[in-house]
Image 1 (cartoon, one colour):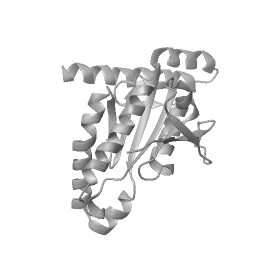
Image 2 (image 1 turned 90 degrees about the horizontal axis):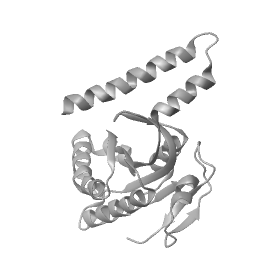
Image 3 (image 1 turned 120 degrees about the horizontal axis):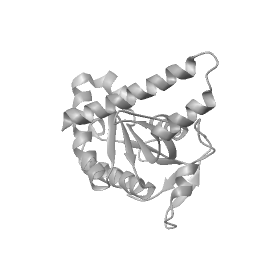
Image 4 (image 1 turned 30 degrees about the horizontal axis):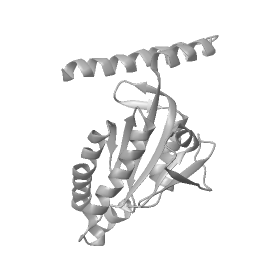
Amino acid sequence: MSFIFQIGSDASRERLDKLIEERLKPGANKKDIDKRIWDLFGETWSVMFTDLSGFSRQVAEFGIIHFLQIIFESQVIIVPCIDRYDGIMLKMEGDSMMLLFRRPEKALACAIAMQKASKEYNIGKEKTEQMLLCIGLGYGMMLRIGDNDIFGAEVNAASKLGEDIADAWEILITENFKNAITDTSYTFEKIEEIPPGAKSAYKLIYEI
């Protein structure tokens, strides 16, 4: 079965590469090719990026074994939350995860569950052993290429929010993501820094 999945993923990348090659040819109808690409690969998703606050500093201070330990433990804590809320993990690079969710409500509920699980994990741990999670969320049309990659403005914005702008315990979201949430019980606060690809961004006000 995994062999079949691999073929599907490679076939998507190969098809995209061929269309990009056509787009590069002199006189190519780029508008038509772009439409074909979006027709083939365009999908609406909620995208999440996670990051661990202060991680690079800890690696420099405590070494690679400490790095591997935190990575392992973060997977143990976070992956059950992803499964519970029907998320799909596309990538894990270092201390960062890239995830997809069909429904923004499930993505937001998962983000809160991750933060709660991290807080419980930290009880009794020394500061150097604690998991300090940062999360960024986006929502909208994006290009999904098999199970390997996603591209789009909301992807870039969510990545910036989760990996660069968010502090420990923060859940930051794009304006598109906020507008897609129908549950009025959530409270959001607008933030000053706007990531490229988003019109504005917000912080979820919540308690853990």
